Image (cartoon, rainbow, N blue to C red; front, side, top):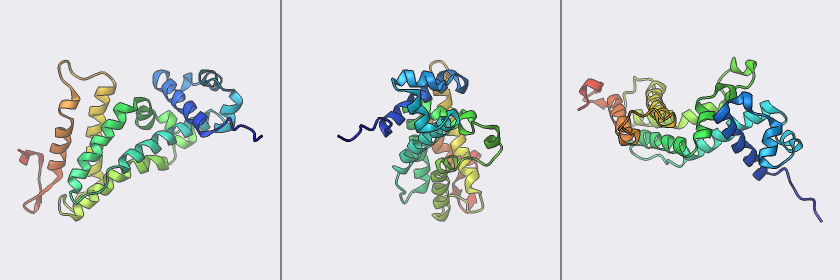
Amino acid sequence: MARLKTHDEALRLRLLHRAAATVFDRGTAALSLRQLAADVKTSTTAVYSLFGNKAGLLRSLYEEAARLFVARLAAIRPTDDPAGDVIRLGLVYREYAIANPHLYAILFSDRSVQCPSEAESKSERPREAIETYRPLVDAVRRGQQAGQFSPESDPEVIALSVWGTAHGLVSLVLSGNEPPGLAVADCYERALGVLVAGWRVSEGKVQGFADVP
């Protein structure tokens, strides 16, 4: 009989999701490979075999969070309305965050997971971080080519303003800091729409926020 494969992808994913929950709740300092193995009912040997060490586990954790996020963004197929695509990407951003708060925190809030060593923290942004941002920048560039956004504006600046708005509103939800009686869900899409409208080209010039009805 063939030997059973115990250190498989299913075990790897269980370890990653459990590690994400631990980091989200108590930070990277609380992440113990021995305790993680016990929580998932496997051996520390399995953890070391799959990830090498704690730094390898944290790196894999970040990569998995980015992979799932990029896959969600990729589900938004480009249309002939790039400005609308920008808003749709923002909606998927929120959906991912609400559905996967632990992974979202790993991806956008915990720098120690993105760069577990001091040397890495001083280097360029991880490749995965660029991949999470690229679909939004690409949509803005298509909008410029379609005449929806000013070609003189930096597409990354437009994308950053959308990302910052989405991140800020989502963070209010995940941190439980929505104002009493108000819900981000009630204004999220409209806020993105107003922001996108503020970057649109109107009558040969960039429409400013003061011009938005």
